[in-house]
Image 1 (tube, rainbow, N blue to C red):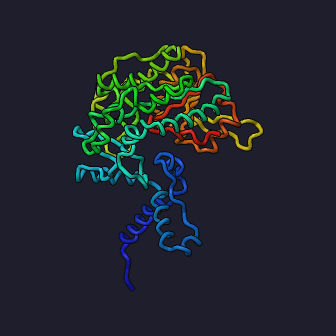
Image 2: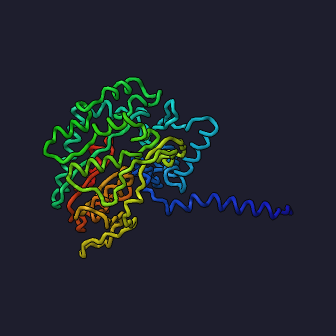
Image 3: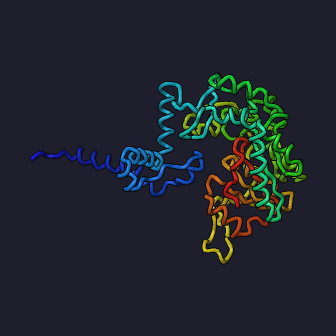
Length: 393
């Protein structure tokens, strides 16, 4: 009889426990959030009949399901990038590229299975978005969404954030196809897609501060740091200052006017992809706004609803100079500016569509009084229209 060492038994138990952790976490992982973040539908678990009918396709789908749903999957991907970068100086992903200064750019949606080019977003903004066909689609979709939102009586404003391809054409990675670089360099206030949309809808509340961002970025690279994915630096502060001016809203009584103090920072792109770059930064302290925040606010639904509440991010502001309330609807660009935005109002509810499924969005619109506010403002990046608000009906 072979004797088993206690150390081997202990090792086997520990290894088995470690291997069970990702599997167990499948049950508690927010798969909807990952699907929204990566902009794609995750692979579904194949049925027994699908496997029997086509074993090769069935097992391939099962592999995809495991890759998409295993616990700690995103963390494992980030770890792989970080180790690859430490050893070889590259991330190993063709849609995460750097320029000569080492600033990283995300050029296409995460894990998009079918992408003709890793520079999809750059090409979209600088080529596709300037065509009449695309801008007309944007106009149609935003008009439909506005028709739904305006029924509730609030002033509806659509806003778009100018992003890197239209602001930093001279500082794009060298691996960017030259045709795209040249197209991005030709973008101006006349042919910019979002500017064209706003001109085609003169009576539509559409705010896109292209001229402001273009001028400020040229003056100061830290205004919209190229090592950030979402807007950062002074850009979101300037956005709110200009937005408030156009809407005749007073800034908060405790609005930090700066100047901001330059320092070395790690912007959000590193947190997203797992490889961080230390760079110059300049930002004001959002804590000075003194907002009261509730990240899991349960908004009550109508009594006849079979559901009870929907969780939102709620902010109250004792220092607002305006006696008004607002709803902010956004994608992942919203959390980076919601506090500055909320400082303009008494109460603000943030609806982050990346963290809210279609059902809950419809419940909020039709089985609650959340829209009983003065302003409904939509904030997304300029590459996210036209079907960003597709679920709204």
